[in-house]
Length: 160
Image 1 (tube, rainbow, N blue to C red):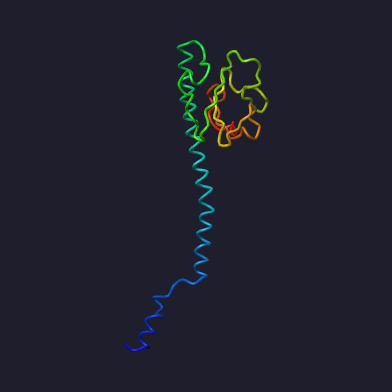
Image 2: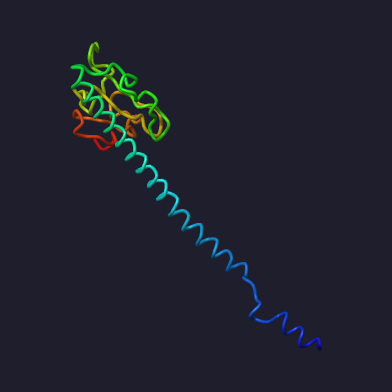
C-alpha cells in the first residue's frame, strides 16, 4: 500500500470528529434543558409529597371521627388511635392538638384574622421546612399541609 492511499484513509471526512465549537454547543443545549427540567421535577416531587400528606391527614381525621363517635370524646393524642409513629413525607410526625381542656386559643392554628381555623382540633404537617407557628400568615407556616374548616379544607396553608 502506498503512502498516498494511507494518508487518504486517515484523513477521510467520514472519520472526522467533533470540533470544540460543536461540543460547546451540545453542552450548552444540555445545560439549558437541565435548567428547565430540574425545577419542574422538583416541583413535581413537592406536589406529590403534598398530595401524600393530604391523604394521610384525611385518613387520620377519619379515624379521629370514628374514635369520637365511639367514645363521645376526641382522642388525647395520636398514640391513642395508633398514628403516633406515622411520619409525613418530609420525615416529621403529624401534629394533632385536641381543643378539649385547652386553656385559651394560643396554640390553635389561626387564619389571617387570627381566628382559629377549626372548632374541635387541629391536625397538620409542618411541611418541608419542618417549622410552624399557629398563625398561617407567618412565613414558616406557609408550607404546612393543614386541615381547616373542620375538614372542609385540606391542603397547603399558603392556599387557604
